[in-house]
Image (cartoon, rainbow over all chains, first blue to last red; front, top):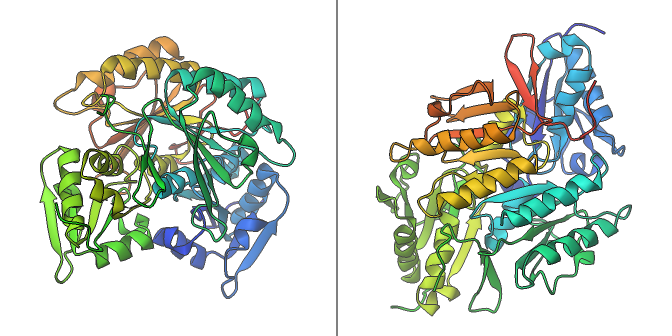
Length: 257
Length: 257
C-alpha cells in the first residue's frame, strides 16, 4: 500500500435532485475533483469535467465502493464520493469511515472531509409544510445491515415517545413486506387519525406527494424513492383554499383551539 | 383584512452560516423578495438589495413574527421569512403554519412555500465524520413550549431505542440547568464510554468542536449555539494520524473487529 501523496477524499451530498438544492461547496468540490465515485444513479446526474474520471458502480456494496475511493485518494487523486441527499444520513459517509477503520493505518492520515447536503426528509418536509417542526426521529427501514427485531423495537419506542417518524428506504422489490409490518405495528401504537405523508422523489420530475392518515394509508404504495413521514399525535393537516393540505407539527404541545 | 393580492411568502433556510452552505434556491429567493422578516441575528447575515425592506426583530415570539409576515404577504408583498439552518427543524416554518391556522381564512389562499436548508445537526455531523450514519432522533431541549416531563420521557425512550440523539437548543442563560438534567438522565441510561460531541457554531469563525464521552462530558459547556450529539452504543471515535478524532455510527449493527 502506497503512502498518502496529498490526495484527498470528499464525501459529497448531492441533495434530493435539482441543482437549486446543491450547495455551492458541493458544486465547487465536484468541479475540482479528479475522480468521482458513486452509485450509478447519482453519478448519472453529473456532467464530466475535463480530465475527470467518473467511476459509476452498480454494485450496492457501499464498503467496497468506499475502499476503492480511499485507494484512489491514497495514490494522490482528489476523489469525490457522491451520495444523494446528505451523505451522513444512511449513505456513503459512514461507509467511508468504516473502511478507514478496517483499512491500513496510512488511511488515517488522508485528507477526508464530509460535505453536508439537504437530506430527503428535509426536502419532503419543506414540500408539505413543517411536519418535522417538533421532536422527530429518522429510521432506516432496510434490514440489510441490522436485524428486523431492532427496527421493530425502535419503531415501538419512537411511537411511545410521540416522535414524528421519518422512514427512509421503506421498501424495495427484494423486501416489500417490511413497510407493511411497520404500519401494522404503528397502527397498534397510534391513532388511526394520525397524519401520514408519502413523499416520492421530491424536487424531481416524477415527484408524487400524498397526505393521508394512518388508518387510510396504503403502505404498499411506498417504494425506495419514497420518504414516509408518520406524524406525532399533535401533527396537523391544514386544508388550503385549493383543497390541498399543508402538514405541520406545532412547536408547542399546548392544544390549538 | 384585505384579500390576498398575489403576494407570496417563502420560509427560507439560511443554513448554518457560511455562504457555501446556502442553496441556490434560497439565494435567488432572498434576492427577489420585497421584504425580509426574521430574528435580528439571521437578518444581520444578509445584504439588503435595492428596494428591499429588512424587518429585523429582537422579539423571540415566533408566532407574532409569522403573523406580521403573513399580513405583509396578504397585501401583495413578496416576503422571505428567514431561519438559520433548515426552517422546518425547530424554526420558523411551523410558526408560519400555526399562524395560518389561527388566522383569517384568506391566509389559506396565500402562496406559501418552505425552502429547505442544511440544518445544524447535518453540518455538525459532517464536520465530525458520520455520527448520524445510523438511526437517530432530534430533540429540542427548550421547555419554553413543552413541559420538561415530555422532554425527559422522550430522552429516556430515545436512549432505550439506542438512537443517536441530536440535542438542539441545549441551554440558555434563562435555563442553564436543563442540559445538566438531560445528562444526568442519559448517564443512568447509557454507558459512560458513549461518544459525545459538542459542536458549536459549525462553519462559522467561532466554531468549536469537542469529542468526549458521556462519562467525561461537561454539559455546562453547551450554549444556545451548540449542537450536542449523544452517540448510540455502536457510535465510534476513530483516531486520525494527527491525534484528532472522526466520529461515526456504522451502518451495520454487526460488531466491528
